[in-house]
Image 1 (cartoon, rainbow, N blue to C red):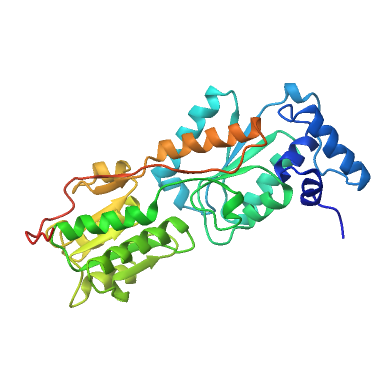
Image 2 (tube, rainbow, N blue to C red):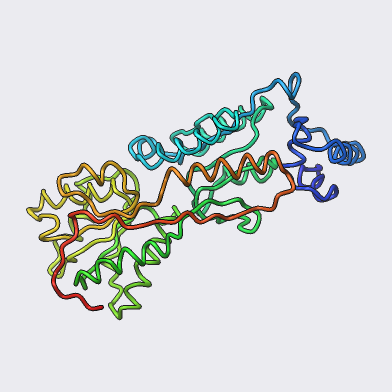
Length: 344
């Protein structure tokens, strides 16, 4: 069996990312560590896959930013732009360059990551999403390339640097907010459960229902895969039932706007016929006709903290993996109706 970068790391007592940086002659690694790692490489006849060209002190220190694979979602969602703004601000302060990578599928993104990594300038990766199965994360783990997740780690949770919100708590608080306004028929509308933030927000919604002794109705819990559309049959089914909900917790603002447009098609109004609370507090929430009540998850801070953690780990390779929770808060506007039945 061929020797891998993980084998070298285990024998040297360092992380795979440290071995990767030794291969690239990264100046942040001490002389002693480099000598120890290289000695083990020589003993095992290990050939590093990537070697830096030229002087390490002269090369650009590059951070890769990976958006989720999608032909449409990432370009329409202000969350990603605000997160990138936070990453870029910190990178600029520390004189690192940033490259944004995305594509229509994982294979396209993976090829872009491999190309950057082969150039020997890539210090690490920030993924702006987390999901249940990710071949890009598999590649990063196999090569020992340092990475940070914005979201919850599904693979190697104890060894992964994560910047996240408490999405379970946020989902529960959004549902509690509607409950305090008198709503008892509360639905949840989210994207594919493969994205962990939506799965956690749905779990928080369900937990709140149980705590208030409300039934968890399967028909009230809807996920939409692919591009959001007002022609979605699941949205029409949710809103046309005999016992339709009076309020909905929606996993992001774009989907909430899609729901509102569907309401218009069906001669329903927000908030008179349907109250909506969403997430991200993006410009969509502020500039819609009904001004959307939304949970602000501090996207800029998520990006800023992700860049901070990545660069700190690049420059201090012996740091342990950390998990940082960025706080959230509800921004009240006009999309939720008080039914006058508060139960405190």
